[in-house]
Length: 246
Image (cartoon, rainbow, N blue to C red; front, side):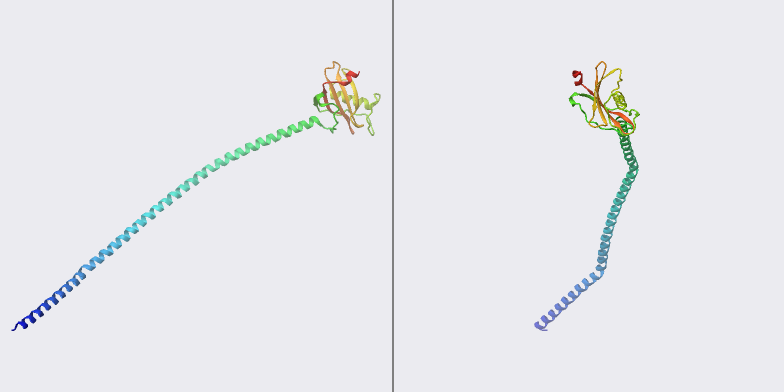
């Protein structure tokens, strides 16, 4: 056999060996893949399942935590509501009690004011009509002004009334009676200084003092239709100008 033939034969053998080696490697790779891949896939699946399980577990824990918090919040709200419900009646009772007390105080005050007003009215007006007569005394000469529960002096006169200052008439006598009544004096223990009309023919003003001349009064009296002469008000004065004229 020649050298060329030997070379060709050797080359062919080398190609065959190389081919068989390549096939063997490919076969080995395929075999490895067939054997190892299922286990690797299972592990990956198992890892995936484990991750999902862990995630689900964490989600459950979060949900449970949130649920617990919600339950606690609800319990807290219920406790607050219960506390509020328990406290509300007492607070309402206290407020109601305060309102009732304030109302009672206001009512008592109103009653007191009403009583005072009624008493003042009785003292100033009484059951007869009050007639305002302009004062003829300067304020700096007045010590005190007062009114009392005076009644009209019962009259014996009939018909239309006109005040007269004639000391012989029934009207004059009744007028003097009302002057004495207002001053609290009597004819025997007083000095009558002057009597004149109070601005019209139904009123009169008198200056009178006690016998000792310790107090001087100015009595305002008026005719009440159908009843008679009635004192309306009295001024206690400092100076009696008529005394110096006597």
